[in-house]
Image (cartoon, rainbow over all chains, first blue to last red; front, top):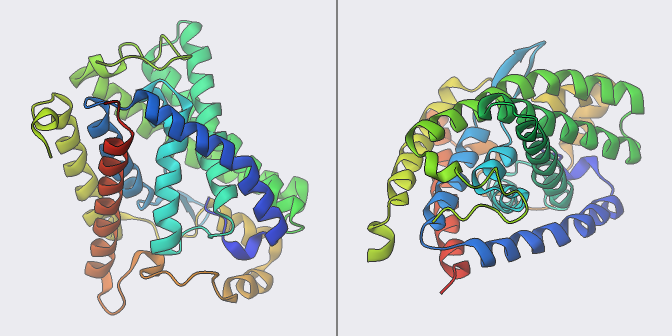
Amino acid sequence: MHIPDSFLPLSHALIYWVIALPFIYLSFRWARREMDDMKVPVLAALAAGIFAIQALNIPIGMGTSGHMVGATLVAIIFGSPMAGVLVLTLVLLVQGFVFADGGITAMGANILNMGVISGFTGYYAFVALRKMKLGMKSASFIGAWAGLLISAIAASVQLTFAGLFPLVAGITAMGTYHLIIGFVGEGLITAIAIAAIERSRPDLLENSFLNPEHGGNVA
Amino acid sequence: MNATVSGNRNTRFLYAGIVIALLISILAPFLASSDPDGLESAAEGVLGEERMSALEELAPVFESPMPDYSIEGHGKAGEAGAIVIGTLILLGIGLALGKVMKKK
């Protein structure tokens, strides 16, 4: 879902940077408040893992593929959507500058879509479903799926503003593809990862989903 | 890595994460689908091939050292190498940032 530079007029690209920057700032403030010796290794492992898994495009039929974004997974583990914004910002910076995946001027839009919109939607859908007593796996599956789908639709609307995509045809195409990508690439992988952590390191998740306002104190 | 970090239970999580991330990095060029992703497919559909390839021809704003996750002239091994490098860069950034940010 990485928007290249050629898809956005510079003025639009700048507006998305302006919207994304406060979230990036808040995500760094979150790190300053939350990072300790226990959490640094988890953050580093997730940054590396999310980058790697984004390189793994899964075929979804119709001659199309897609990959995981990962903001919801990171947000659930740390108990804050800001964690997702931080990790996706780092991943998108490296992808853009080192690998030409996603534009440089368009990076604000990509951070907004994949870090902010996907992470916030996914995390708060997860929290709402947990409050409705849904299990960890189902809640993380649906949350991650919703996060990816909504962020793809946001990207489509941005490309409509850019004069590139017709509104309805754009949303239909982006929605259809990302409904499937979100199911396999985001929902299933997130649920599997959460299930694995729940089994091997339940302490990592213990507080984070119960206390969405403050992020769980893992230590 | 200092003693407090290596003596920490989460270091095992870090090592497991590194192993999984490197495994995916090495296998990705062989397993990943080369079909266009959802955004490219949607763009091709609504813009038509001609306008799409015109947009793709535009010179990038910034010249990346390893565009498209590849190292020129090294085929699949180069792709695996590029992704491994990216994974290690993010590992380094994650550790460094965590260290700078962490509570004293």
